[in-house]
Length: 139
Image (cartoon, rainbow, N blue to C red; front, top):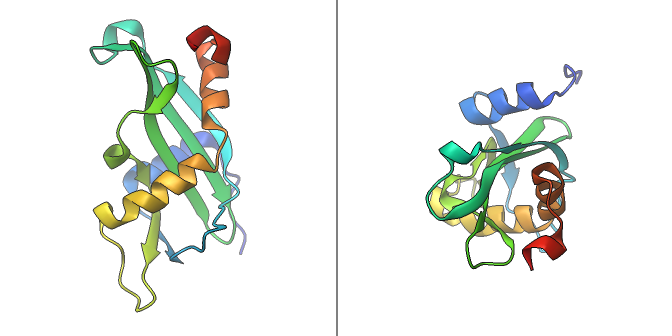
């Protein structure tokens, strides 16, 4: 299958519009999508949610037989010395996991797998780089 070049803008469109969902069986414990960092956006200070020192969105993607993308909001919260996923319920992806009997997982059932996908990336390093901070700055 020939796919057009994957750009961060095309993946943002794909992920946010969910026009081409990618169905995958439930993963094993060693589940890894080989995602790569595509873009991190730092929210301007005047648009940041209350209580956050730094806030933004990060986008990761992969191409196997179909492009997969996942994006989530992140934050550095006052009095918390590390970067956090702002809200797992607002993660956007075109990935759809299906149970062994072929049923698509609900959003709430998908959350533990999304959490595992995010943990398998080096997102905190990439976000810190984009935000111009070092891990020692926030510890």
